[in-house]
Length: 397
Image (cartoon, rainbow, N blue to C red; front, side, top):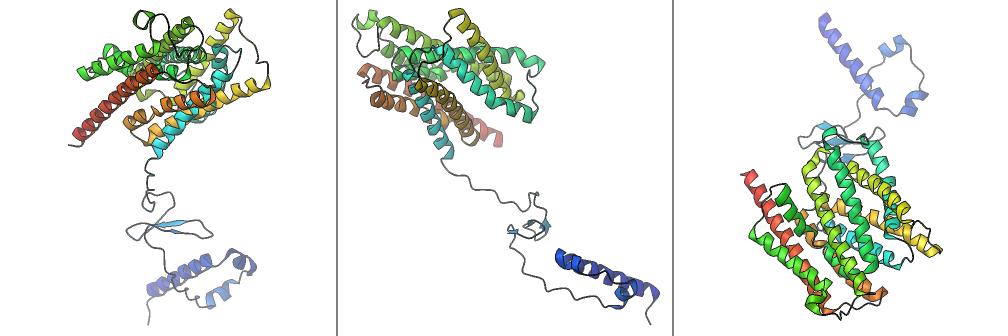
């Protein structure tokens, strides 16, 4: 004789099994069945549960009509978004360095196209580049809801970041137009050395004898490329056009390098409190406004005469944007030291493209200057890399 509470518990278990069985049936079968009466449902015995199918191994996905379920390492079912059942993807070795090489190649090709454009001022080219930057950054600002002005205490730094960054771009483009491609590219790679010097002056960062040695190497490389007449005589070979244009291009490249180094120091001062897209937004907007004002004052605004130069202008914007994207991706998945060293491939690409497409053979002075600058940049990058690794080990201890 069963007690009433036992009968109630058995009926509740049967009803629970029946609902579980109905949930396991396909949707189409459940729709096709007519709803039985209350008495019939009470008289029918509960259908036996199907035998359990072998579940997936821990960590594997089980595909079904209801979505993917995950099994954790403890053998429990976990929802698809949980961390218990997800596997960490294996990092592709060397992917960040490949992105760095691809970025250097895109920047070099953009510089080559800049030298191929005729009768277009460097300021106008910079204005086109800023338009492409704005078109790329604007959706990101809207998506991340960062605003267009940034924090009140950081706006002055963002303004100078945009002003100095756009100035560096205009001066660099001018240097590419009036001097050999490899010479201008090599001078721009003195930026890490000047960054260390400016960080020591304004941010009170450590500046050792090694940094001073690397600075002297960089200055020596620039002198070998500039070849001033009071050291190398009045007859200078291996330049494009007159020596006055070569000297103007050298000064513009050095000023561009100092502006870029100042930009990096400002970004270090700002830190991670400002989103990356907002920094590029200031760079593009202030650069575009400055370029338009300069074009109006200089009366240099003109569209290229032929369709080829117009295509080159568009490609310069796209290649510059692509190079910046791949460089950013490289810094996200790789340490800054190897990326800085691998960026010197830009110098190699510049020499190759100059010989193949511009028919300009670099002199031994240029090669010697390039070796000095590359050695200085690599030494600075390796030293900072070792310093960051040592700091990371101390934090772990």
